[in-house]
Length: 497
Image 1: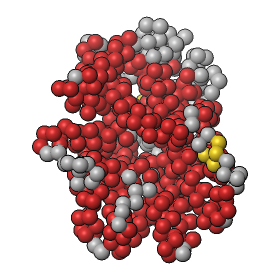
Image 2 (image 1 turned 90 degrees about the vertical axis):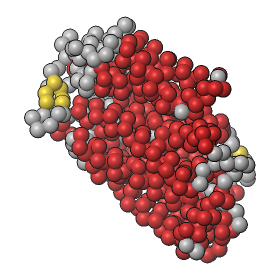
Image 3 (image 1 turned 45 degrees about the vertical axis):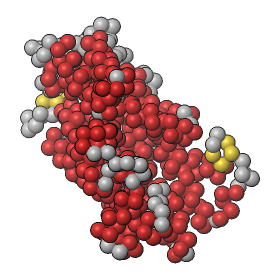
Image 4 (image 1 turned 180 degrees about the vertical axis):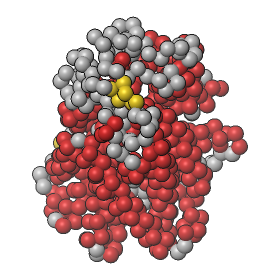
């Protein structure tokens, strides 16, 4: 069958199809290209999206983790800034395809990996997000439970102290309530998600700045508090020179890149709604690095202030809020803080952990699932995986997962920018027997390049002298897979279609 022909907007490089795809094996209203008329997101919509995703408990604790590993406060902030500027590059480069062609990540991946091979990066990325969805839903549910307990102290005792799969009855009730709130926005679709992120962003920033003001007011002065941040260092001996760069800074920088490495792959799920490349570039630039640095800085200052005020570092913001509420006898203040935590978790959870898996599952089963159905599958898996039971193990696994994310990202970047020079056959992406069918639907060269990237990362774990390859797993994976893929594909394609 012949695919609909693409039309290009005369005022930009945006492309759309003259008619919807008609291949029954790939046709899905949620995956089909976004029409140019429906690409309505501006830079402030995308910036608000990043503010909503970045303002969360893990970001708050980010710099503290780096300080404990052997950095001082300004080195930690430098690592966070550099890491987010570095990950911004693939965000913008992969986001270009979403904006130009209006396609989500699973469809974008078909160009490099094949119409069937695209399931490999798409589903593996989706499963990680489902685990994170379960963790974030657990965190949000605990914040709601704490809010209720402030008004009704007996709340935590319901169920007689029974524990089911690691959670009390009260925790299960609020977990289910917070899960349903997440599902509501999934059911309403991407426009409701855009509205929620725009509403949450200014509120979260104001509360963060208020928390910073509280810390400086109680701690004496900003410089006094930052000087106290050295007390957060848990490393027995701080390394120096090359040992510090390889053993402390490089792993920390890799972790900062890995923090959003998943979104650097599926960012087309959002940029497909952008009005232009200019909007998607400036939206991400304004939203991601500044927010990550600011909120991480707030976390450092507030935690260092707790050393001055309480004689120990209080890393958990929930614990800090409970202590402040007890000292001030201000239930209203504590309630507001807990509400903020819940909103921050909600805004991160939906955008970062539901949109991508929803599209991935819809791509895997296009005849059965739309975005809404895929989102319900992702939300259900987030519960069934029970990731909160193995939280520490799971997060440790996610750190090592950055190598795979880098290897996949290297293939996508090389294919779109070096091999095809941003020229895709839009109609062909929706054809079972089209230009991206390769060998049985799999581009074996893309798979080989991904494996090569992972293998080189693996050498870093096996050979002590090559440990830097593992310490910088994401960078290693991107570089090796991009070079191997470009060589295997023979450089630039003469005919991208």
